[in-house]
Length: 375
Length: 221
Image (cartoon, rainbow over the protein chains, first blue to last red):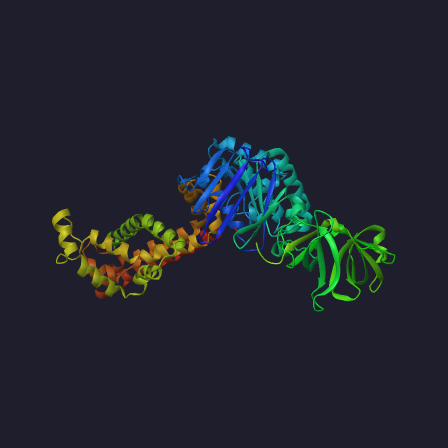
């Protein structure tokens, strides 16, 4: 990402009360998602950005303004940060109506102006006047969240933070909230940082993923790039990439820029399925054990015998027909430990019945090889 | 009916409440959000007047505040104030034996407020003072109210400590509870009856009213 002065720039480190460190940046109008399992340090990172926690070292600047600098002992308290934070359980004031909740972040205005402004923000997140006059307990989860968003926006924040914003909202309201977020990023032109443990949601909503685990940033980049090329097995794990296989790196191939990957079946004494030629990024030494993944887009099922080097004979072991898609699992014939997971749509769905013979064609340009261990 | 004693009791209860409320709020709120080594000891100290026999508490107060004690001597010499057998001493004792009645309900009330509300307030730009008045106090108010009523009523009826530290000086330390005891001693059961009934009605009424108000004020969460 470019390093313009309006962006969010973070590079911090702390050891107590829990270890959190990481460096990332986010442009205006972009959504950055901090993703990872619970306990990964995502929420701590968010609290550090909000000023609710003070890291030991590092620097945070937002819109060219320094919010934290460990070297000069600069630390702006949350009150002076102009940060909008939507808490996971919204943290609305139970004794105040929706309007008064929003008006609470406008205390610098005279009373009447506060109410007018609060109404505007609540209209903006599409809450009806009767909903606006209710206390949080009389609002649904989705409505409460809209109030929390309105309260955060009323601060006219330079940075918007969302902590697991969709976790407590049912699927139907989620769609509406996705839309709300899409509208916000278009209108606001400030960096938006989202914390979620749901990789799919993160990939759907964010322009940039920061994958965290055990308080550290494992990998960051655009969602598609991370899904295509996870940096290591742990990232692939966290992303929930199902099409992960074992192999041994055999070194450079004849064609420049390619290498030989010996695909093995871990279940039968590391029998070699086939040696295939894939892109070589020169990160791996020959002879090393590797994990490799292939994006779902790179797997096609065919109703004809396997002929080419990138085609394999297989049998359907499982087929689950959901609404408009079918989730199928196929096993390579002769290699019981190798299973591929495919999502099928349209005419291809007719191919899969359990025990049907199929041919799997892999687009090996989408294969990505990574070392078994190492960060 | 000993109106003078009743008036003195009301004066003592009001003064106690007035003196004890600010530090009680501060201590209760602080205990609700602090974790430190020795917190259990501080909490035990707060509750101590509740479990100690009033005569024991009164005895120690008498010994530590009396003219022979360093504190009593210092007060007499530098401030020209006696701390026993007068209203000042009574007030001091009353403040001490009411500490748990204020601090405990206040602590519970503040503990019940979700921690992230204060954080949400800070992020919304509220200073800690604004957070206290606009967020914490409205939510803790039912608990604070019942603490105030308990303290008031408890002071009206306190006997043992009052007798130990104040004696029974009309208009100075003779509260309504002492007066009832005096009347019974003098076989004037009719007077004792009236005063006891008044105290009973007053106490029951105040506690019931505070419970009623608390349930009305309690915000649904």
